[in-house]
Structures are given as C-alpha cells and as structure tokens.
Length: 320
Image (tube, rainbow, N blue to C red):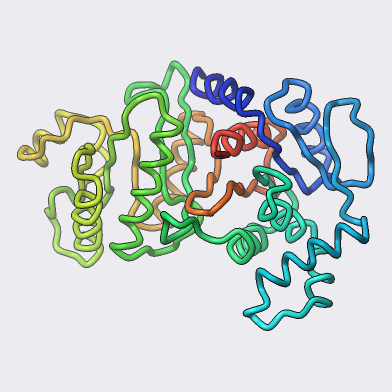
C-alpha cells in the first residue's frame, strides 16, 4: 500500500508532536511505542512518568501549576459562555479537555484520541476549544480507503465523505464537505482529485428533493472550484465506469473513475464505506476530521493498534 508508506515517510520528515491523551489504554501505549521507535512522530502521552526509553515525551496532567495555566487558557477561551476559573480548573482535569487546551496553546501539534472516549465528547471539546478554521464553515469527516492489488479496478486509493459527522447536510453544507474533501485529497492522494457528488439518480433522472439537494450542491461546488473535475448528481456506477456514464449522462465531459466520493447523507456514507471495507477488505483509515483550526482525529473505540498508528500518520500530515 504505497500511499500509506509515502504518508508515513512524509510524517517522518515533518516529525510533529502528536498527543495521545488516553495513556491508560494498552492499545494506545503499544501504538505509541511503535510510532516513537520508527520516529514517525514525536509522541506525547499524559502521565507523570519521565521515562524516555522509547523516545516518548510525557505531560503531567496532575502538575498543579500546569493545570492552573491550562485552566486560565480554557477560561479565556470560554468566558463568553459564562464559565468561571474554578469551573475551568475542574474541567481541565478531563484528559480530553486537557489535550485540546494543550493543542490550542501550541504545546503539541496534533491530537489523536477516542479509543476509550466517546466521539461526541471528542468532537464537542475540539469544537469549543480548537474551533473551526478560518477557511472553513463546517467540520466534517472522511475515510481514506486503500485497496489491495486484487481490488484496484477503480484505483488504489479513494476518499469517502462525510461518513461520521453530518447527518443530513443541506446543499450548502454538502458543497462545503466536498470542498474540504477536495483540499484533503490534494494533500493526501498521489493523483489529482476527481469529485463525484453521489445520488440515487444520474443527471436528474428522478424528481425528488434529495436529487435537487445534490444538484444544487454540485452547482455551488463547481462555482467554487471551476477548474476541477466534478460530476453530479450521479449514481455510483456512473461515477466509476465510463461505459455506464456514457449511457446515463452522455453530455458530461467527466472521465471516470472518480476518486473523491461525496455521499448525500450520513446513512449512505457510513453504510457505504463499511460495505466496501467488509466486502473488499479495503483498509479504511479514519474518520479523518477536516475543517478544524488544528489537527484532531477521533478513533473508533474498537480501534486496533494498526488503526491508531495510521491515524497518527494522517494527523502528522495535517500538521502545518
């Protein structure tokens, strides 16, 4: 899987400081040792330990002076919501909050968490402390789908979005998701992004509000990215197969296969990536968050050590 190897090598060059706050989880500790030993990133854990045998750094969340500094930072960030310093001091005792404050202050370059922390907690803390980036309007997610040699009929790597965040995005939100996925594809994929705005209808063959939503989202996206290969609304088979596209949408100049698939809602996206993962054995790396001011990524609570390592690799590549 050449892309993962390439991204790993790129991470080694950047060598950012990535915080894994769930240091009491055995999978996280094993992944931390692997990442540190291979020098993929400077791994930071939350713990009072100072042992650097594996090249791992530690931030002590029980250090009273440090907790006070972090509480002051959190207070300044959220005082407009009515929080006081005592409440901030209590909140930074939560490892997820502590990690986001560390990232906000620039003490680390990225955060990977979620192995034991619910996604809602990870995302809410990221939003209220890190916030949305200046060039984004919405936080969304994607999966990098990596196919083995037996399943590369449409390419080795694809991006599926949004598979984890936005349940039923509007046309404007769908265009924003696609725009973010385009920027992520530019930074991760080895080939130029070719975007398909997916629907149950190709070229408005059916009349429905969901079809209209994808059509409008496609128009918005094309106005933002006028020189990029974009097709929509379109069914999956037509987005991937030129012969099918010729039959269903002969007037389009788009040449399949697309490598960035934008799903119309969370139902389709989440089911879609899991179908591909289960039936083809594709490696699904993610969910990768996009649109935040600084890199945070949320692990599945059922994640493996390998998945933690891959998520850190992606996060390292998101660091500026």
